[in-house]
Length: 298
Image (tube, rainbow, N blue to C red):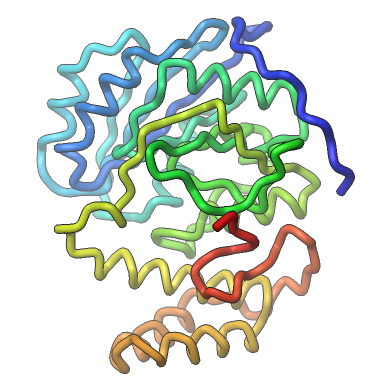
């Protein structure tokens, strides 16, 4: 795909008015949510018609009272899953369906805090490049290590923790792949966007605070790590085939317990597509470290 020079980004009000649905999936987010809400209350929205929607995958009664007591300047809606934890992608798809024909979806993790001008910078970047379907914000203080082109902003995939998604693309591609319960659904959507002729870009001037799970030293991350590995295996099965799956299982055998590997094999057999897509695209690549999808900056 030809390189493009980046267009200067300004944060003046967007014309005409753009409909923005901010979407956050909650799960045990009682402690994180007040910080996000304070950030949302300070978010600049000039030229944007903004609605905030929360979908709660978790148990307990804390989040609704926190949401309703916040009294944000923009309309807020809260819904709780009636089927238990349905996963990140499935929950985002439900919220997107409620958003109707929204111009953009701003996906924010509950452990993020957007800078005051983050939304306007993301929308300005999207408006400057009509082919940009996923416009990712920079995470602070821990920056994401995946590579991007400083001249064009193009990157192989966009992290779903803080990303503006073009509504037309999301609807065209039927949203997130719900076979992925948690993790890697953002990589998959990014790759499908590239295949459909769109672009994924990174906007370093749009920032949010994000203390990721890796920095939460006291947290039991076993379930998250398991889902990361299952997502990795699913992407390999979907885009690369059996040899890539076998390669990752060989790598797992060097450190993962045998029972974990057996469980991964069983779960992958349950969700994997019948055959790989058989596509070739310069943006759809694996990294030899078995952790990253495509080139990294360090």
